[in-house]
Length: 119
Length: 107
Image (cartoon, rainbow over all chains, first blue to last red):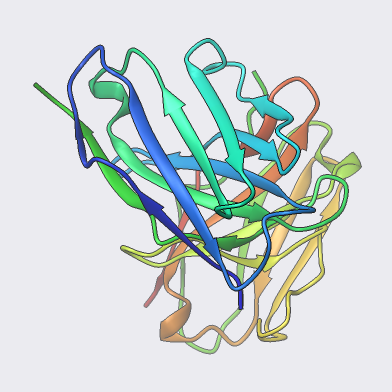
């Protein structure tokens, strides 16, 4: 059974860079698209972007100028960097696998990690 | 930007049928996915491609999509179905878009 786990600092200062890693176990990162999604406290889900195992990426237009995603296939990990954060970036960040297929859903999710932006 | 409209809340008595809608002018031409999110947990896929169910999801969960509205239907609602439900579609200029979410309350 594929499992995903997010890791990274739970507190980031305003204007700094948020960095998270998702470790995939029970399956290979190769052959799949991998995504990051966030959820502000008490709010809905917001798609941040996805990265293919080859390194190709696609980002939410509203975050594109601040986001970078990458993949490390030997470590079976993929990562998120969000620059110039503000309090509005405080959220639970989830990583997820995209099921194979065109416009396919997210079939495996990590448990999520809370990142607070505060000085 | 592309917006999917869901009712903020739906209430239903145990054993009855809950219907949660997701609206957008062209949604009938897209594949809609639905997720269940219990408090403090990650979302779980319950319906994909309008009406298919992943393995392990009860047959009580079904979906449909036509015209301007996609619908998630939960038959014979149980207390354990109480959760937030989100629809999701791919839109070419926005990427993956989620609806605002619907809180299902089991009375």
